[in-house]
Length: 294
Image 1 (cartoon, helix red, strand yellow):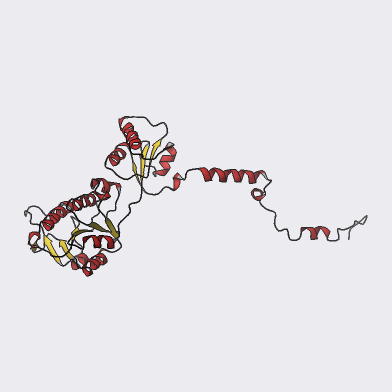
Image 2 (image 1 turned 60 degrees about the horizontal axis):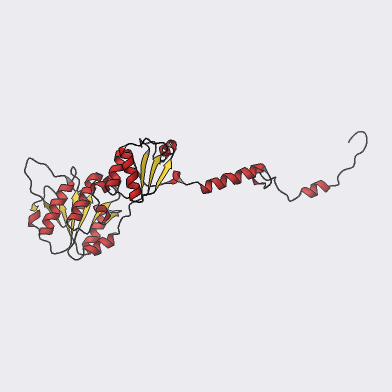
């Protein structure tokens, strides 16, 4: 009980007036509050800022690698140059090439280039390559149906070997190259450069399972020939009258067991006894030559 003079209560008027209003909104959500104005300005700046940090794809960094990639015809999504970069002969040639071939070039701070390239030694210049667009297996099968040749790679993990195989396949008129997506080199800048531009005109297919792809080729009437150093049949003794898949394995391990089982015939290239094996790309070139000659 209160002491002294009695005071009049509100009679519940204040409680009723506050009912249903809920919790007080955050300052940044109140349109007349300064915090809300700051939030709006930040969102506007972010909307108009280029999203360079989200760029995806393979990076080529450093002045020599960038210049070599450009001269090799590697496809480029965007070129980056660091602010205040020292102009030497290589950089001037890079800038000339980019201008002549209409390659988009963005200027970035050194810290931004460090972040984009994951801290690589970029020497104030970098290329962002687009993701390679692999062909469909059905398209290659259809293209080779009329007596064509397809090259299948088993455990070719060196991108330079893969690029050289693609180059040879294109030179001998093959319909395409098939690679698995695991334990295999991918179509990187190194593979593209090694192909000497052939990757731009020859379809490359990436499959989930190489053995299943070989089964599909067999169902569509292809003869599966596997290159193996210990095979009894020589490559010049083979005269297929059907479209062919030439399967080549790695220089060290050769063809895997399951891939061997999916081959109709294992063939070998005769070499001197002192040499244990041929480089995968060299073996592919000889195999393609013999098959096209046959």
